Length: 263
Image (cartoon, rainbow, N blue to C red; front, side, top):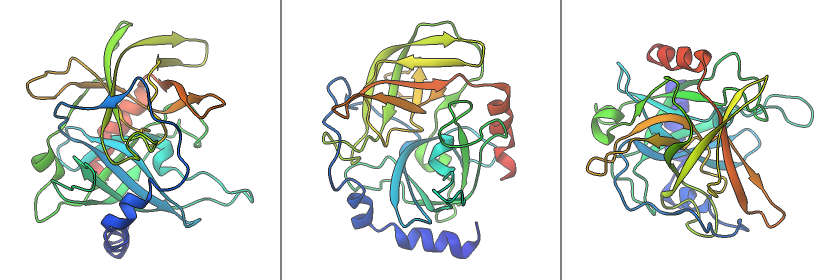
């Protein structure tokens, strides 16, 4: 993204526009997920728009990097896919607000200078390797990792079930995307001939996409280890999310993470 693109993104996302993402008819309030009462270093709300003129939000997390500028999220948050005429939908105005809380921006607003997903992730409806990395501009000479902290990330194989804290900013009636919510549920691993998928009966609504699945969270620091991020959810006829899933991290996603320093 050019410097003018990043300047435009910061101008686009006024506090009023951020709040407006949660306006309109929304899914019912979550019953399992609750407002997160702990600290969550590096976790924040990701705002973006597209070439169709739509504003959206996801969740993202600062992860350790040499540049100290990298966040991890879902691939479909920054891959716009195709419109009904099979033309690419461009993702625009990407900014990250670590620690976002009801309009508060405690660490500032960071514009994205680049983002990427792996070659194995093909389009937004794909469940395989639905992960992306985003490189951010520093703000006032300070890197996002310095001011907001980070969560560890691991590509090691872990045995299910995993006691998991899943975090996100769901745009539902409960918080309208304005506050960080969490589920504390076990995650299980479903394996078939195509891929391995982490699943949990967490009910975080849309907007939580890209949010971290954390294991081993230290209550004193709020830091844990990301072993997955939210990709998709099953929604029933009442628009209630009944479960979340994400393909287990692969070698392609590990290579994507390693390459983020070059964005």
